[in-house]
Length: 240
Ligand code: NDP
Image (cartoon, rainbow, N blue to C red; front, side, top):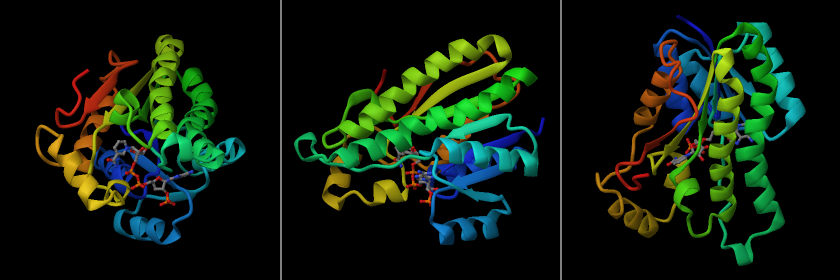
């Protein structure tokens, strides 16, 4: 059944593949971005998916943004919290700004978006929430204490909200991707990237579409028995 779906960070990278995957399933999709207007415009021109610009680290902006989407498309039934950033540094060199920017964006956004969306889902007795974590939140990573902490936090947040929501027809799951072909990973130095690929048993990066396929499965109406799960998609790099 077609549902109203919101994908944060939906204009680029994994989010773009998730948004277009949900569109292909017949859903009414809205994509949230932060400030890259050119990428957002190009995405809209390519896909026809409406775009909404705000900072998901800002609690009040999430309330306003979701209200705008609900006015345009209807009540939000599917929420994919995908927006995320890195600000890498070894901890002994990490600034307070690098720490909080990542925690606020990657983990604060989970609270900000779910807090405003879950009440309506509870009232209507249906909801699907998917939160994008990361392999590095599960195993840790040099230079990413901020990022790994935020992504590990996403998993605990997901399990707790899943417990709170289970009796209301709402599922809440996390997806933990390994390294995928996106701009975020493209920014990694080539010699570091070579080492990363060598550590992946399938010997390649993941494709955004491979992440999107799992997300579209998790939000189906008939996926109601999957909740509180963290699905690993990492080419065998980490087996939980
Ligand atoms: P990209 O950098 O390619 O895309 C990021 C998207 O998120 C853009 O649409 C960007 O908007 C949006 N965004 C970033 N910050 C905010 C914000 N504060 N408010 C609203 N929107 C924001 O990211 P990826 O596709 O690589 O990553 C997507 C998610 O997957 C992230 O959570 C990441 O941590 C996770 N992940 C990625 C992996 C990978 O290999 N790429 C591996 C494991 C996890 P704008 O264009 O305006 O900047």
